[in-house]
Length: 388
Image (cartoon, rainbow, N blue to C red; front, side, top):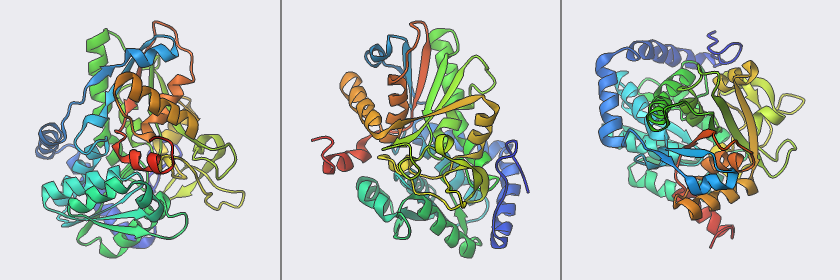
């Protein structure tokens, strides 16, 4: 068993998945240093996805927290509207390198599903996306996009009908189809090597942000903030600053509607270490070890576990993890929209909401990773009467 991040991570998988996981591990080990693969990935991210993304200063938003310099890393400006395309293109290229012709994926907020469907269309691959029936209802625009892009979207009606159940179904599919199928996992979790694959592909965010902030300000930021569901956008931007002890790294989970188990998706506040979907990490579970229900206004944060590298950073004390409730996220959503003309995803609004609750020195420099744009959330917010 491989343990990638201290005591967290590993490969907790049924025997039937050992063969495809080992195949993927060996291929990924070679692809990470394959110049032709890395060149193709770079070219696709630059000419197709739209990298590098800007680092945008938001002075009007900054006034709400006492006037430090606040910058947004604009992953919302990527093709498909979120950071997920970085991982999807890289994994679909990896799938082709493995000789696979079919790609399966899970999705919660729909952004990973759209990104995977987009990458498959670009690369000539068949695409199947599993999505909880509840998430299909609240993320209807993304479902339409996936189908328009040629993907088959399969509704999952088990359990709470959200992301956890979608992952379950994707793993069931993969266990019987791996000879011609690659599972494009959407976040930095799951069995090894997936946490490493996703973190490596998303590290482009941190590399760019580091170069950009040094160019603009001449110094490193004092704080880097990102929302944390599974943790891919957060580990992506954190990776550019992990070795800089003076830079505070803050992950923001979904506080939902309350602090009791089942009312939120705050794994570090109300969870404990355990195993889910192939890795040992922090997760929400009851006293008997049963996976607890979760809640968040944001479909992309509504998941009971977190990536193992985040669990390791938490126990090391290198990163801190907090939470923002639904109402605080909605307040941040409105403020950024009105004050800066940028409509953020509800996931990213949690990171913005955290900043709004803090007090900063006037000479602080803050980078908030704006992981996606909010177009996908507007029908949900309108149907719930939150906006008109």
